Amino acid sequence: MLHQYLKDAICELKKLIELTQTDIADLSEAKNEVIFQRLPYKESLIKSFEQKKSLIDSAMVTLRDNNPQKSLSDLLDQEALDLLDELKIALKELKELNKGYAKSVYAVNEFYTSLLRKIVPHENNGYGGYAKPQQSFLTIQV
Image 1 (cartoon, rainbow, N blue to C red):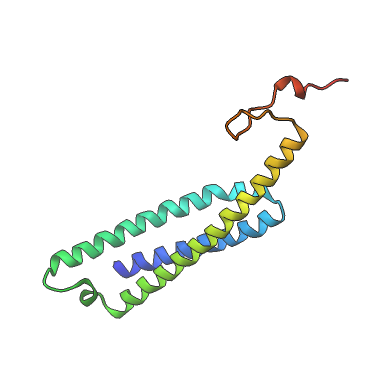
Image 2 (cartoon, one colour; image 1 turned 45 degrees about the vertical axis):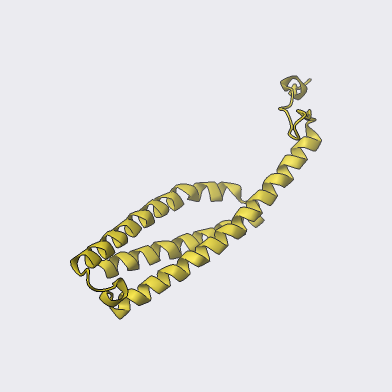
């Protein structure tokens, strides 16, 4: 079962990597709606991955508890060790992608925030931040 849990977890990570790459491409083209539409699917993949990770942990603890005299690396066969390495590589790749994605999202957020502050005047609240604009400013005259 450990092998299957590892394979499933790797598959879900690869899907998350692919979706994150798509999100990065869509963010650069300002396709925000499609990014938001993918969020529930990504969240379900993350939840499923966390469940698989928990099953992997449980299987490895059971294996270790059944053979306390041996180290875990001696208990795992080569396929399991290879799958664990592949899982580690996929996790690192997803981490790096998410780091770049977060920087891009932050840059876009700062751009829109600064643009909004130029269009709609904001008052400085005295602590280095900005107060909300007055609603009366946004009235429309016909």
